[in-house]
Amino acid sequence: MVDFDDSNYEFVAVVGPSGCGKTTLLNMMAGLLPSTSGEIQFQGKRLEGPHQEIGIVFQRPVLLPWRRIVDNVMLPVEVMNLRPREEYRRRTQELLEMVGLQGFEHAYPQELSGGMQQRAAIARALVYDSKLLLMDEPFAALDALTREEMNMELLRIWDLTKKAVVFVTHNIPEAVLLSDRIVVMTARPGKVREIIEVDLPRPRSLSLMGNPRFGELADHIRSLFKAAKPA
Amino acid sequence: MNRDTAVQFAYSIGTFAVTLALWQGIVRGLDIPTYFIPAPSDVLIALSRGSSLYPSHYLITLERTLIAFAFAFVLGVTCGTLVSEIKILERTLYPLLVALQSMPRIALAPVIIVWFGFGSSSKIVLGAFSAFFPIFLNTIHGLKTIDNDQLTLMRALGSNRFQTFWKVKLPSALPFLLAGANIGIIFATLAVIVAEFLGANQGMGFLIVTQSNQMDTAGVFANVFILSLTGIVFHYGIQFLRQRLIFWSGGNEMSGERN
Image (cartoon, rainbow over all chains, first blue to last red; front, side, top):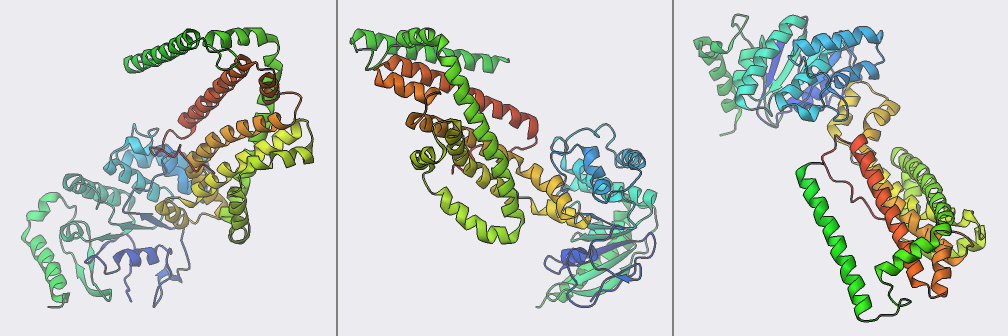
């Protein structure tokens, strides 16, 4: 059904209207759902289930409320029984600093704002050194300002960690701002309509949104959505 | 204590004082006989009169209640876990236990005394039997109402059943376990006292029946007063645990399922 290759350090966005199966696709890529047709390969092998080299960030932060932030980030390390513990604890500390949560290590999730909780969730997805990071509309629940701030943060983190990212969103400017390539999907049946190369320079900043090329790309994607809609 | 709780405390004490004063006044004013309704002062006298008698009986009842509760808690949580985690047990045992649950368990007290005798064991069995169900059902309820996203997260991390149980399900179910315990301890107390009414030669239930037969109503009230205090201690004990263990839970599961 869909085939794209995420070789090293690429940022791919998947955009599409609600109900086109973006989240389903992401869940298949995470090994959480069996693929309906075709198959999903990761590192040249068929993906049979959840994989330790794939990290996932959901729409909601999904932090465990009885664990402190640092223990939430350590959860994958415990579950996967990664050793040595000390090293991962150090890594957790570094990641929390990287996502801007230093000083909140021992706070409980409910003491943090939505944006900060999502930062912790990102740190959790990075702690076990996954090669591929799947993100399912991770900033959809945030207000517009926080969302923009988090977009910039994500680019910074991505640049530091050098991971392949698949980022699902229904927000067109967000997709253009972040990614190298955009997979545009259409609804019912969920199909890949087009894959767009984003030829905007990096590093990117919010001011890029005023760039004419940015507007062209966004308009093009919008027109793809419109064309797909039955008249 | 901050100002609000201090004010609230003053109001509570005031209400108690006024109620007791009214009670005393009405009983004395209308010249109601002590064996019918004792005045607070009579209850106080009964308490001091029984100061050598009550402690030993009280400790026996307390011990039976706590043992019964401990059995019920361990069994309730264990059975609840097995039933909610193992499909075949849910299919087979759950309907049976729910059927048992709708039975008025106190009604079995006479039979249980026949089976287990006049000693402590019959009281403990009835108490544990009564307290088991609220704990059992709340455990199941707690283990069944887990945030789906948390389970998906664990699955994405490749978590096995035991890890998911210890790291997510059990902590999530804790508010429900405590709600079950809160009701369970009340049921255990009631059942132990009822069993002591029916056939015992020690314990608060036995004492109440004896005093009642001797028209010592003030003595009965004194006993009930002691038991009420115990109930309050249990309640706050569980509240304390709640604040310690599930500080993170905003919801109010304390009501729980009563049966």
